Length: 560
Image (tube, rainbow, N blue to C red):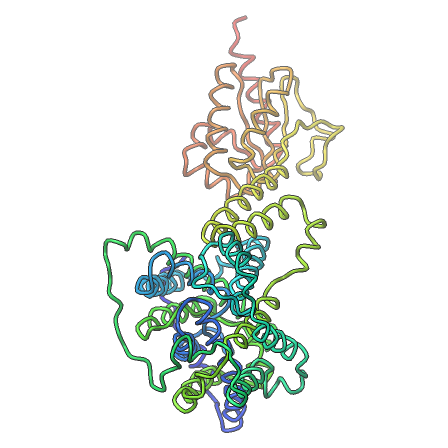
């Protein structure tokens, strides 16, 4: 890990040779993505427990900053479905002001991660963990939309999944069939919307326009943005630094870390998707810095957490974007819409926004993974199911923590099972001529063992157990280390213990063919001094020669 601060936004490189034709392509793509983002931004804001304009402000500010400072040429940033449940939970537990503080803290964490070049580390989060919490989030989003989708009369939904479902079940008799019909129609229209039209006019925006027009023209008795929130201000967001309660800062570290981790994962996954679609290559560390800047600045204008949005990024690329300027235009398009058309927004039915979110949640879930569970290794299936269950029933923080720990334990177990420590004879020899004992004279009193794989804490006990099964006590023990991949402190401690026991029995340990990495580790730990440099040799022939020297010296030292 390096502390060299990386800072080279893709925008700088994109502006070299930038021309009018490229600007026209970015303008078309940016305007289209801005239209796509409008209903999503409002829906994510409402579902997160804040106002619809908070979602729009997030898309404007974070979207502009992520494109301006980002490490991906075509990434579109803004509020996403992945954050809905987290934001709702933080507001429920800590309040809106502390959500803003959490988001700013997450921004600082993301900048530090980028500065420390930790972008590549995020890629090591196991697939079962990411798919487990992604599917869990999709289920949670669906559960939060049942109330508005069916028009149920509930004052407020509990933040936890099981109490929420119980509350929804108790109020099913209050279903509003007109609201349900509008919401179902919205889902059907989005799903059936022709793809050829969707390049210029997405189904979600069409549903938004048609639903709003129906409410205004026919005076439908549906709950709207106006009836619940009083409309959307037709103005720029006001700057205000959140009030910090220092006594609660310690409690906010955990949710802030979860926001940062999820923002990093989602943005880098989206950047990878963008690379695949555009044959580009993103800078993961610069992208983390951009995400950090955006998440630090957005709360200053009342915004919520933001990250890379895969669907909007894909729309941007499909519509011909060529540089980060398209993402900046998308943000300015949203700003123009709220400045011009905000008064109309009061008539947008919540059932329509709910239908948009239901489609987002259904598309977000990787539901085929449940069918593939039976084809996974049992360990991967256990990680997936555990992460999914904890995300739904408890929270994403616990799910990621437990999922990562469980995945790490199972990985250690799997790697330790590949480590082999076995006695070598002419009948079990597998090495080539240089390292083979076949055709060589192995003196009586010499035992040769082969160590293969990672010799670390998960496999150190294997060394002890294998030698305990060795039977007759040798006078020289040769460990052939040529295929040892790595060595850790636990393995070194096990070898130190082995040396002590062997010395008590007047047995000498000889190491053969140890690779440079493990040799350096033994040197730094002082283990080579305990073994003796003369007992660390390059190949099996030298090891057998050294064994003869030891046996000869031992024989000559005996009394006549």
